[in-house]
Image (tube, rainbow, N blue to C red; front, side):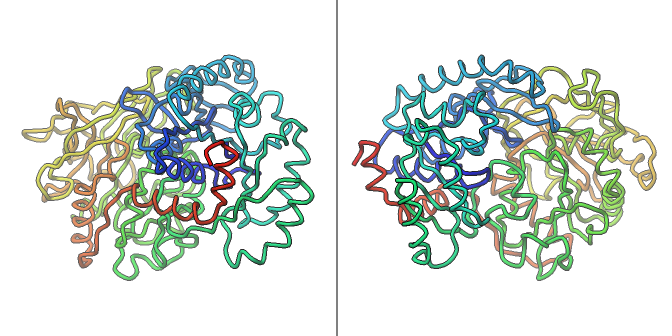
Length: 538
């Protein structure tokens, strides 16, 4: 079991690396995390919802994602409440006190899922959450030492040395654990180290003498690792792997617009941004600069704008208004339609924001009705039932200028979205007026059309086209839309052509090579013979 001295210590990626290493030895291995708190989730082939970290770890094992790998998923909707998902199904919206009452039921589901999954495996690689030394949470723990005890797991305690204080964090964690919990710790791992690891030797020896636990290795900081992150925190900080020097990263807000022939794409910094992994494939493109902006003053002169998913669409809409970004998005959309270049794109919650209104009669988010950006003639109502499914279909040529292309991904939303009048994917476009807002009056005369549909011709997205019939404002409910190389490349080529930029190299989006790179680096850094010996696999 991989536990950490803090959040974001690198537990998820180290667990993925160990999964990959063990699978390469021919062992049947599976990942497991009893309880995950994240806004980035995934929909399995049977329409169940689970955390993205375990999806990546499953890929490292060569397995299809299975909700038993992450039996409890918490998706925060506020500072004090979350949607609770158990074995892939939402069981309710709970405040902290309500969830603590529910915890015994969740723990039963965790034990059943672990037992069922582990029965078919040679090795289980379990990931903890936060830190086992959060003693205020010990009485209700189901994800750290309680899980280790239930599984009989050997614990690797990981500290992030890049943020400083790693040795104090390891020593302090051991001091706050009970004697029984300390006995479960097999060894320490320092993660994200930059420099000459031999300089650490005196400290490693001292801490080993004080705790009686060995250091299993010092894992270096792996730059430009193109693997999805579990949540949007590191994305917002400009720390997500896959950033290209000079193109992305911290401080990119203030960089010159579109510099060095890069396609400049702005992503508003939504407080409840979810499924940031939708943008990973775009961020990995060498000809793209993805900028996250927090206010109108950092808007710049983008070539395209993407409104990503949101776990609280209504509150994020209010943020766009307060920050001045709503006016920026509306003005840019008008510019795209008038000039016949660029695009405003909304994904899931972003699609809903582009519409005229979001109704929340059940109070799933904020309650009541909220005016949207009024760029598309859509009305969304948040319903109790949640749509969870893998979806395939096609993208209309108006999105890229190329022939109709296949798309695939997954849907995960409470919203039911309708056009204010009928829209259809073929035939003459249907007029659908938009309520007037400053800067959007001219949009009212433009027809809305279906720009994306599933295999049964049911709409997956809608858009407005310019005078040449190219979609300039559009959105879709399909997460993972940009992962498909063919569609992503066609879209980027179209945007570059409209911006007057020369062609740029295009990347292939694939996790396999990056998982092997991660596993190779971790194998070189860790004392794998010692770890395997303690697991009885030496």
